[in-house]
Amino acid sequence: MTVTLTDIENALERLSGVAIRTPLLRSAVLNERSKAKVLIKPENLQHIGAFKFRGAYNRLAQLDEAQKKAGVVAFSSGNHAQGVAYAAKLLKTPATIVMPTDAPRIKLENTERLGATLRLYDRHAESREEIAAAIAADTGATVVPSYDDADIIAGQGTCGYELVEQAGSLGCRPHQIMLPVGGGGLMAGVSTAVRALLPETEIFGVEPEKFDDHALSRQSGKRVKVAGTDATLCDSLMTPMPGELTWSINQTTVTDFISVSEDEVRHAVSFAFRYLKLVVEPGGAVALAALLSNKLDVAGKEVAIILSGGNIDPAIHSVCLEQYPDP
Image (cartoon, rainbow, N blue to C red; front, top):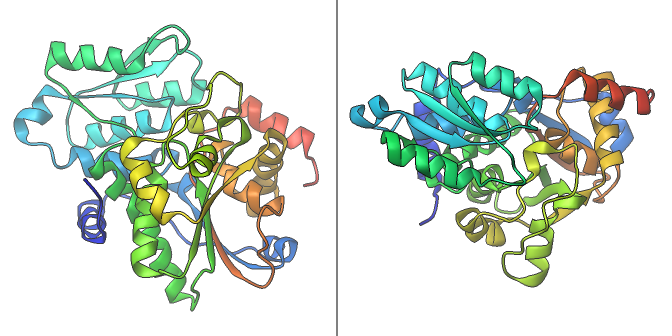
């Protein structure tokens, strides 16, 4: 199974008039800081505050009437949960979301507010996959994976397709694109679109250093699982192992993978608020963190980054601003 540019174009049609076509922004301060021409795709401005709505809606919109009546079940620490909940609400489909008890409060509250039924679990003692499978067996609901699904990947790929189109309208062909990578769904979709439209562009996945499973997998030539027990602010990127389908795509489409530290992420969250006037969650800010900490030589180049989400607890946001008052 794979995902093609045609799949992404079909997803664009389904999402037309439903998803937000997020803008492509520029920042004089960021350009000066990086000595590059930087384009910013702020998916924190998407419905539910993250790119996840794209894939969720593309998947749910293809359910038949019987499947829609039976409902859907998903498992997520927050952004996929909200994406599925909102897509289900629009399509009038019941949704049950399996979420960890330690998920950010803002994500728990928003998911419930969107009408989904929550099933909380202990991420250290229970299996979210097993819980979701049991719910599906009991109710007939369709399980909606957060990343290892062709329709989810195609939906996420619309973000990359839009980025290329918008850059072209500005007369730009990015030399490099950086974006977050957790399970790899956004990366698989975006890299598929970019490889087809701008084959010469380098694509880099960015992950927190304590969840660097993609970097380790690239080094070993096969999927590697990290412990997944270390604390990180990047709750949306806490997948300990690349997905099977996503890795089959990303191992060939992605140039390389970069890791950033927790301090570099805090710095990026603060920078986004103070200079870009954007609220970005830690996991959504890792590409900006990589740019600000000079993980790549971007001087004199056209570079694009994706800010993948903005669902951050106010307390964590305040801490980032206090630790980096003048980033």
